[in-house]
Image (cartoon, rainbow, N blue to C red; front, side):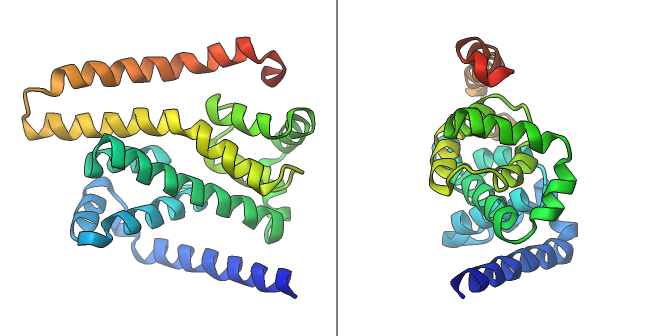
Amino acid sequence: MKTDAFRWALFLALSGMIVAAFYYRDQLDADSLRQWIEGAGLAAPLLFIALYAMATVLFLPGTVMTLAGGALFGPLLGTLYNLVGAVIGAAMAFLIARYLAGGWVERKIGGGLKRIKEGVEKEGWRFVAFTRLVPVFPFNLINYGFGLTRVRFRDYTVASTVCMLPGCFAYSYLGYVGREAASGDQAWVPKALLALTLLVALALLPRIISRLWPSGAD
């Protein structure tokens, strides 16, 4: 009985997201998003987190949201709000696949699902951590894929939270630097160099992780 109620709750939440995305489809560009969030006042962080989670569930570009979070809230709060939104969205996608739309997810991922399942069977939650650090699958798609594996929801959520943090910070800081540059602040140049360093480190991270963790790179 509880499972049926949970499935209905997931279905209603997903339906609401689809309706909202269709209704506001003309406002889902970066400039409209900024104006919308800035006009929300004290509710802006909650609205942004909800939008980020919705974007994750509906396969909308997460990089745009992450950059916007950094530009709107700064590197630290932007990282926090981006991470919370991404984790909530990833958790919802996981639960939708596990309890509501497993057949659709299996058809969508195709042969890649076997690799995800084998990775979880071999490494458990460590495979979740590895894929968050090394993007071997598209972020939005693999969230659903993990829902069809035997990994526990708690382990999936914790590993995702910890291992998505570096990327969230790097892109949040980049969004913040972009805002500073657009405002004409002359101090943006050293900040841009730091942002570039973070992006280079992020780009090198997969190679480092693959060498230290050969089993995950197979």
